[in-house]
Length: 314
Ligand code: TA6
Picture: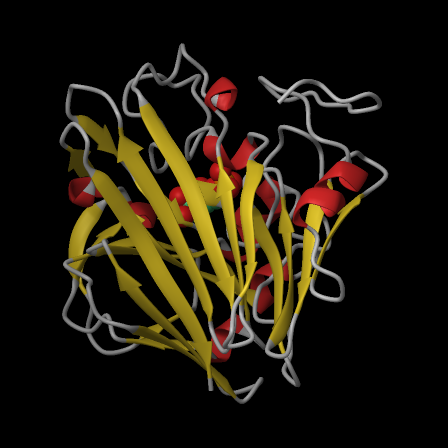
């Protein structure tokens, strides 16, 4: 793809296609359209009989999902800054090809480089069940060779229908095994974190990152009374986010992962982060399907890994 006249990009690699070009090639009248905000960010807006959604081309990051007749499910900070190459606070960030800080290179970006890179759209489908399926791919030029010398491809498949599905697909095209850590670092909108409970992690071992990573066992539902930052291990079942204030349950069903990350920064950490907004922490919880800690994935040459998740509201 050659740089387009009038395109502007401060990302590594190729320039973006213009919005008009994207709409010509991938737009679907009254269902899928591309727009560009004043800062140059390109967003995909999806609207169908089931829901509306918005996805930033940077990071192929979902930033909004509103099932028809319901309140928004995804939390986006009021202080989220859409600056090219900078992570967006909220939505469903793609953490790849490592989770958290890089294991040896402290100057490498936390949670990998995929979420701040400019992705490409490669397919858009309007399906017979009324859902919309979009496939994003990370262009080869967006892989920083000094951080990732492996021959891998990365696609993000997002399906907006009666539920929301996200499938992060890594393909090892090289002739050596490749180990990846990853997560869909999704921020869910809640009425008040102090009344929220998570069901489905009972009796799981977890690494308590607030307590230096010590191993603990989850007794009963997860509730929130302070900064909470945990990697649950052996976690394969559904997680239910119970939200009494919004009178809603969000079910997180996953595949390709046995680690689930649960995070709320609470008061002090939020203030240090600076982009959580006033009392933003009260209205969000992260439940992340991951391959983190001992659950990192090693792909044999030619192998694919799918980190798949489905969000359903009730
Ligand atoms: O998923 C939880 C976590 O790893 C926390 O430790 C915190 O760092 C959070 O991710 C946010 O990370 P970010 O790089 O987006 O500020």
